[in-house]
Length: 176
Image 1 (cartoon, rainbow, N blue to C red):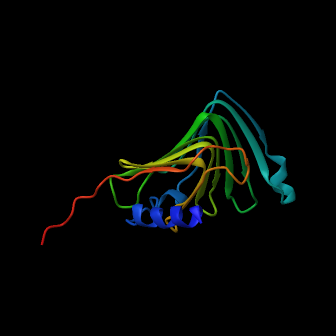
Image 2: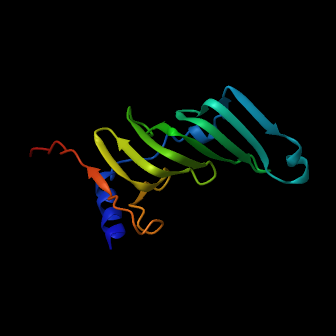
Image 3: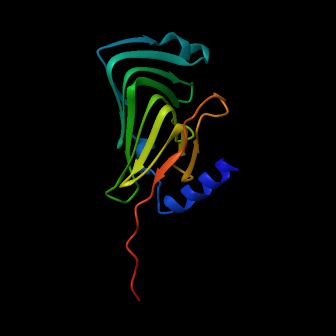
């Protein structure tokens, strides 16, 4: 029941156009780090290519920026990337489509799926849009559908005392 009410709250909270910059997925992915290991041979056998980046990792694709201490990137034969970022804390930032506003997130582990345009935040998860913010043990953010889901970790850790927290700033009301 808590999950349903949290989803409803976020439907209201982020009801505006939360879509990520539409052209981001058409941009090349740039990666920087202190060191990297890349396995290129896999693509010729229709397997995923796996790359591991360590130290001050920065993934950039258009307006999307993911920063972490370590990142494992898997690319399938169709060119879609799945990146798992680890850090204290890993972060992402992406411009909202047609607006001068960003969605930002932080967590200990972050998974980005370029095909689904989805970011999942695990452990100490926090997501912010403007002055509105949500915190929980797990946050899922689907940029194309504007869907947020936040959990407190009770399913994975029954002894967890963490709670989902949200700060919703008052919006200016239009006067007739």
